[in-house]
Amino acid sequence: ADIEPTEGETDADKEQRLASLAKQGYNPVIGVGYAYASAMKNAAEKYPDTTFGIVDDATINTKNVADLVFNEEEASYLAGVAAAKSTKTNTVGFVGGVDVPLIHKFQAGFEQGVTDTNPKVKVISQYLTQTAEEGGFSSPDKGKTAAEGQIEKKADVVYAAAGLSGQGVIEAAAAHKVWAIGVDSDQYKQEALAKYKDSILTSATKDVAKAVYNLAKSVKDGKPATGIVKGDLKSGEVGLSVSNPKFADNAELQAAIKTAKEKIVSGEIKVKSS
Image 1: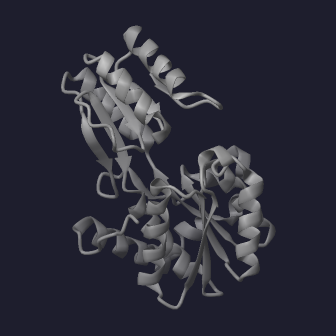
Image 2 (image 1 turned 180 degrees about the horizontal axis):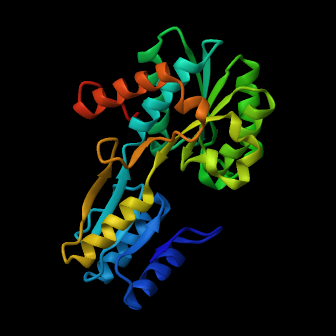
Image 3 (image 1 turned 135 degrees about the vertical axis):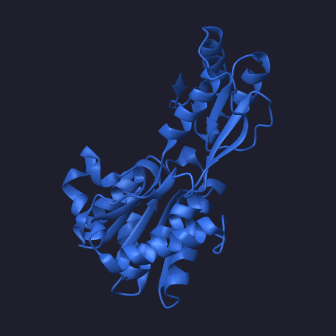
């Protein structure tokens, strides 16, 4: 069973939901998002025979918890290569939802990818809010305003790592005929964004479903995965989507991305995470 946090839910509420699933015999029990960390630690200690999984958090050091984390900085590096190769103004933007370590990974990888590809390209980076409670991941209007500000400063490719707020970034990019780069899933294929899809160059994806499936399979096979379980470019759990033909059919761009990917996988390029 997997669950996501709901608005206004306290840690005690989260712990109760997790414990109730474990009590009902669900195994594994998965919490989506770092907001579950303290609740899961407590629930896991009460139900030692259940395997728990948490997405996007690596702080729980309990023997029956799998920390499902991703090298988002690697996919973001490739997004930076794509941005540096696609800009005509030598200015690109990064919009982060909330100023937290998880999103710093996206920023660091993106900036490094841009600079390694073309040091002349300037990156304008900003965060929408300091805390999730202020709506950084859930306010398309904030995303739109931030992107418009960057576009005014000549950014013609904007990468959003901002949850739902990223929809506003994509809307602004479409209105101003510049490129947006999506995040987490292939946003070119998202129904809610269908009318803007031609402005979505690519998306830096992470395959949470694959990580969850692998965890469930490990439990079923009697060898539950625990500790830090990392998805990266090598495992295919992070990468860039290729749904937009303008991106997929650009041979020069694809060659640059392929080279960067090979160098990251081989360890020749070390991608920063902060």
